[in-house]
Amino acid sequence: MLLFEILSDLVKIDDVLLIIKNDAAISEIRSNSMNIRQKEKWITIGDNDGPGHMHINSELIRSAEFVREQKLERVSFSIRFYDKDDNRILATFFTKMYDEDKKLIPSRKVVYDQLSEKHGSKIQF
Image (cartoon, rainbow, N blue to C red):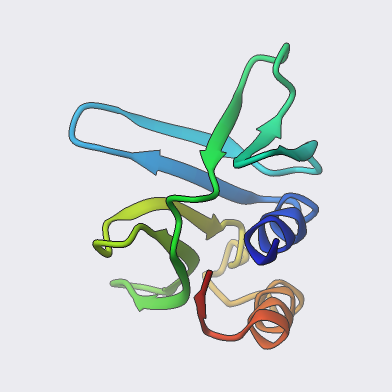
């Protein structure tokens, strides 16, 4: 249930990019108040009949981590979800964290920090 709770918190936040990536394809969906529901082991984000949605097998995601990664001109803020072998299954990136002068927007960072405080920086499911 904790996985569903974290994902539910994320889809309520505008400008969070959910990314599923493998060697052959990348899927990106913006959160912006998307629907989320769980039926048995499957968590669905988005509307099945809409232009984009994803299904997540909650039994295969074992951990998550809040990651702050230093890039060339800024810090990237994300939450990454892993399987039992520590392969990244899903990543959620907080976008629009900086203004046009490349200065961190404090209110956006507060949202990220509050979520980290609520759930912990490293989570086991």
